[in-house]
Amino acid sequence: MSRRKVKVVNKLGLHARPAALLVKAATKYRSDFFIEKDGMRVNGKSIMGVMMLAAECGSVLDLIADGVDEEYLLDEISELIASGFGEE
Image (cartoon, rainbow, N blue to C red; front, side, top):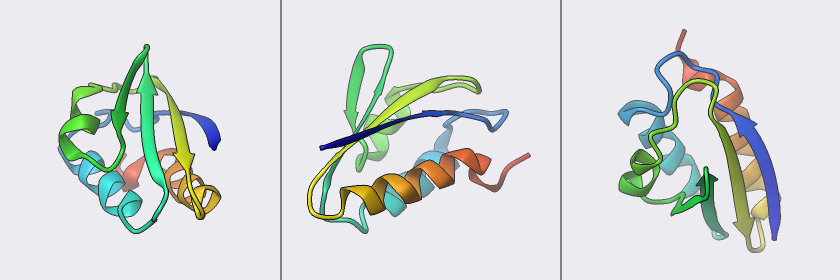
């Protein structure tokens, strides 16, 4: 099991479009994937779960992956979040 902390940097936070991009990226991997924010843990491969986090700009997320490709999953998701999902 691996964990990483990341900060949401895009101005609008983790709204529908970024959440969809995150889930699409995560589902390419075999590892289990969860995201925690303020004590709430959700399935990172579920659009509804990710949206329930209501992660605004500046929120710190704990990414948790467990499986054969966990490091690759965390690398891609961390980079996606750090890039602001291509938004301003």
